[in-house]
Amino acid sequence: MGAVRKLNEEYYNVLSAGFGRKFTLERDYGNIFRWRGSFILYKKPLDGAKIHFGIMFSDKYPFRPPRFTVYTRIYHPNVNDQGEMCMPIVSPEHWLASQSMVTVMNDFISLLNVPDPQHAFDTSATKEYLTNPYRYYYNAFKCLKKDQEFRMTGLVKL
Image (cartoon, rainbow, N blue to C red):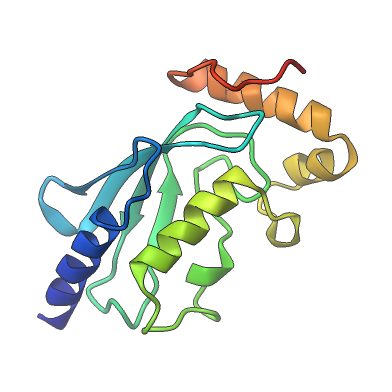
């Protein structure tokens, strides 16, 4: 029962955190152990891309970390083809039961806006990001444009 109470508290804390940029979050069909949401990237040149995601929690939460999935097809060093993320803050070896979901969500949104090549999941995207950033952003833009709604505001010409 402790996990349900803790998740309800965390859920409302995240909702009231004011993430902005059209951030949405809801329980997946009312299930407190499954959240889904979306937000708009703010970092150029992919500013305006809408990212859909899901979060799954164990009934052992907060003693086990949540699992994030990116539903939007994205070309990103920290996201693989299945939408799984390499995000150190929620890895079993770094997870702390005292970690708040507001902090985790901040890290998640920041990581999708600014890739971390030191914790790569997609090696080809990482190599391109490090050696040819213009090509990386071009491929990332193409991938996002194919997969979703895309606002063109703030986009730089590549």
